[in-house]
Length: 231
Image (cartoon, rainbow, N blue to C red; front, side, top):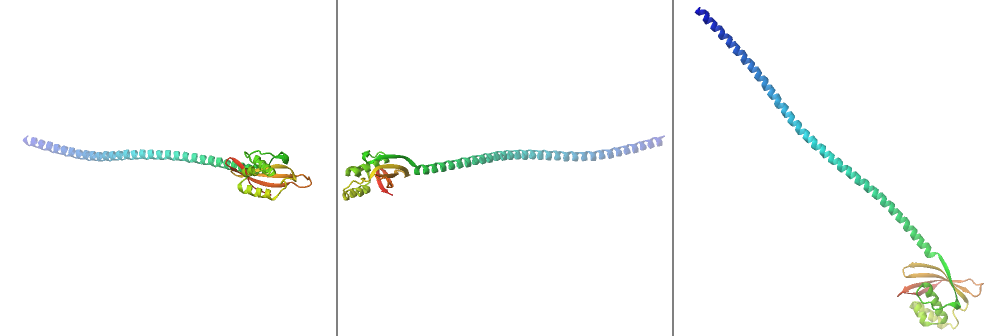
């Protein structure tokens, strides 16, 4: 009986030892699994953190690209505006040059074209003063006809005055005995304060061709004075 009990106890001890050993194996296996799961969790967490960082970097890059795209669109719009402004400027500049050319040509045409003739008979010449070139030339011719040295000196430049006063001293006859009238037929302004008048002297004898001269007048002290005369 005693032997049976001892044997039973030994068997129970062996069973308990085997059961304990099995539990140890199971715990070891479970520990390995847990370690693997922990490592996987750590890896997943690292991947998640990296993904978050990458996402943040991607969002920053997207923001930067959007900003660059906005600046590019803005710059492109400014370039288009500049091109339109340049095209408008070139158009206005071309139109301005065209108008200047027209005005210049018109001025040239006006300066050379014939004016409405001013016809004055020699006997009707009077002292008209020197307020206009047309008045000054008539006053100049009147002074010659009347041999008026004072008026001649005033309505002509010193060079012309001395030249014609010498001419009057050398001649006793009237300088316009052979002419019936004077015609101012053209006017041009080659430069400021200077006018050229086209003058035609008509002979009493109609068979003779009119004598044509160009007379230069300059503005001095607010009055026009005869400066030169020639064919």
